[in-house]
Image (tube, rainbow, N blue to C red; front, side):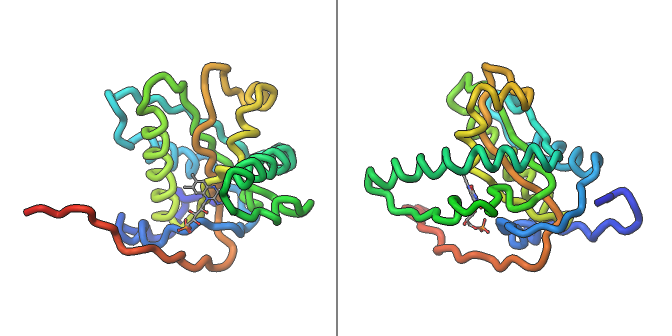
Length: 200
Ligand SMILES: Cc1cc2nc3c(=O)[nH]c(=O)nc-3n(C[C@H](O)[C@H](O)[C@H](O)COP(=O)(O)O)c2cc1C
């Protein structure tokens, strides 16, 4: 997808982008071009950052074979994590993770991993704020995105980090897939905001 051409979609304003964002789980095969990915990274780094640390660093994977390999590696690790959590009282079912044809990246062409050195208590917050900026920017230009938390454990394996160029002292914090949505994703519901106190 080349957003520098005349065919670029109308950009949404921030409220439209927030309302249009969904976790998209079906993607068209279109490859995002470098400019588009760069635009998303630029939006990410405009996030607020505690003590102006800007702790984030990014890995971009657009290699389909590598994405498939990472998915195959991550699935059993995540299933084991879920089993462990369920044995401690949680009750999530992730049966689809055991299906050979299930790809944890939902067939998206681009995986962006936000990484950081976990050197201060606010680093994770910074990275998740950057993640939301990135996803809203994607939404604003008509792209779909989805956080892939189920990949985090696999992305913490030393061999995987090495292959992805993630230095030892960095952690993968927020893996996000981005791509051209295929079909429509309906909005999920939300509870009304629970206001504990509104004192005037
Ligand atoms: C920290 C985090 C981890 C997530 N991990 C996954 C995941 O591994 N796979 C997935 O398909 N969606 C994942 N999601 C997306 C949520 O399932 C999704 O945000 C939620 O169901 C609400 O849907 P919506 O984003 O379309 O509003 C994750 C979201 C967050 C915030």
